[in-house]
Image: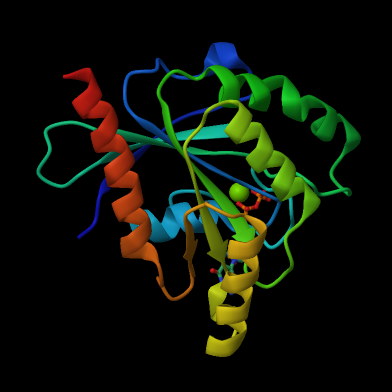
Length: 202
Ligand SMILES: Nc1nc2c(ncn2[C@@H]2O[C@H](COP(=O)(O)OP(=O)(O)OP(=O)(O)O)[C@@H](O)[C@H]2O)c(=O)[nH]1
Ligand SMILES: [Mg+2]
């Protein structure tokens, strides 16, 4: 099954965000963690640009997603720039909060934050800060431990165990954009969150 997708817009200013009509799913995480790759793996095409160089995504890139058989788009995916990469140009880092914070705080249609963490490295302070920020803003989130293909079964188990200890109470899924592991589970989380919004509106 493959969804239909369309690039909407790239925004670096809240005034350029698309009208908040559909439930929106935001992809967040440190630079180079694999946000754009997870989007591509979910939709099954090279929709978002990925790169081995951190700092590829510089704007909030909005994509419409249409479920097969539906007459029109029913979801929006928002691919966000990464944080926590020191070598990014200073002005980019300084500009970051000026459009990300209002997005995360005020975007009325933001339904679910998909927060990516690298399954290969220990929990990072910047990830903890983001999760605290999201909790304070009352945002629903799911944690994705990605690049799981780089770990053996035992290593992944240990990594998931450590993450569960660090982020108690959070929903955490192992994922690989390379093999597609975790894809169905993440789609389920996304549909669940989107349906919840639609039900509360009807
Ligand atoms: N092995 C492996 N590599 C991955 C996976 N996901 C992403 N990568 C690689 O990680 C690098 C970064 O991927 P991106 O999707 O561009 O990361 P991003 O988080 O969007 O990065 P920025 O936009 O720069 O913040 C690329 O070289 C990808 O090929 C994965 O699941 N497994
Ligand atoms: Mg990206």
